[in-house]
Image (cartoon, rainbow, N blue to C red):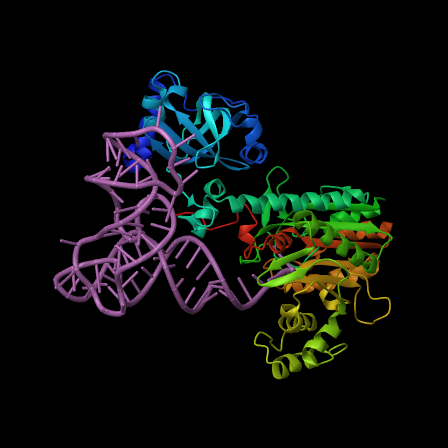
Length: 511
RNA sequence: AGGCUCGUAGCUCAACUUGGUAGAGCAACGGACUCUUAAUCCGUGAGUUGGGGGUUCGAAUCCCCCCGGGCCUACCA
């Protein structure tokens, strides 16, 4: 980019940078000793102990650093707002506090909103009542900003000129984070959520593990994968769509409780609930079943929600959602019957299609859909949207669940539950299928169907033979759980789009 | 992928319905001001109106195509 391509403000800031260098001032020095942050100073300042007498230095000395977000120059003195990770604090600079002609020739001439600076001095309360750091000891430029930073003005009640353009915010998340404090808060909470979840699992003695993201055969969910290639081995590889099959291999190996928090990748569309890479927690515990896992899930979600809010209740889209206590447990077919009046348990595909298309007038069903797909459609259209408070949906049809154990009592069903909150699936769990013969048959059935959907793929390529071999060595009975971290974060932070809980969501490239 | 909708100065927005020299606030620049805080006051500059084409004497405005975003639908969790 030649300088003539730059905007007026960008050119001027480059000129200022050159002028700083000519004066022997490094626009990008190496370090600054920070010993205090904005929030902590505002919190601990005590008028009785710290407020200086007229003409004296205060007793509360600090060294802070951050970005200049607003400047109020009044001749020989200036107030500016400095923002660090914890918040905003006002800084007061007087010409005589700085060496030689620094104030006149450098501070007012060569520094701008957006520059990162270090300030050392004392804390005092101004005549207007604001706790402020006076740069009495030292002031240094720490990084010159060459692009104009959006300036957000705010009072206690209102914010002005806030950067709202979604595209701008997602493409330049660094600017979004720099000027929108609420955005930082969301990602801080996301980190707290993951940390609370990890703590919960660690406390129970489960081992955190890492399994392959690059897999020769993908499995563990039904989704289209991203495909890549390893050069040295000259072999195709897939980015995992789930961790499940590797984590269960570890149960074969004798680990009795394992979990992984990591990215899965699904080559599907984008929406406010879907990003091609997303974060999943999966956990498997030997010798337990899905009923036990329901109790654990209640505990886990309540613990995480309470860690973020001090209360298990959150407000989302006008609903108060209570994540405390025990949650209703409703079987898949009961839920459909409650919502529609039709008992579809043991109904065949023809009957389900008839009810869906003619009685319920669902638009998306077609006669060629198989039983699983039809039931899934009926459920997600008639039941799911109305489940606002946390609800366990249990005992799904076997057609929808190739990795779950068949139900110990009810024919045609599996031991599975999904947790639904605010009309969305948040968690999915089963009594894990550990019968290698049953698993092989279900894989083969699924593979035949999937191979038809992808060009040039043979059914046998889609079957994870090594996983079946592992099961043949013997996997203990086990309960497994998967939780979508992004969606849980959306609920617990009140965000309406998955892009608002992912720092760098996938977008089309800029032209 | 389909439908709807949006794209104007560094940022937030107006002008579009009804075609007539593209405006405001903040930011920037020059000046005044040593307790201000959406600082204030005086002055100045800043735009390929996302890109291309068309209609018209004349297009930010009307039409078409393309690019990018948002929402909804579909695949999916």
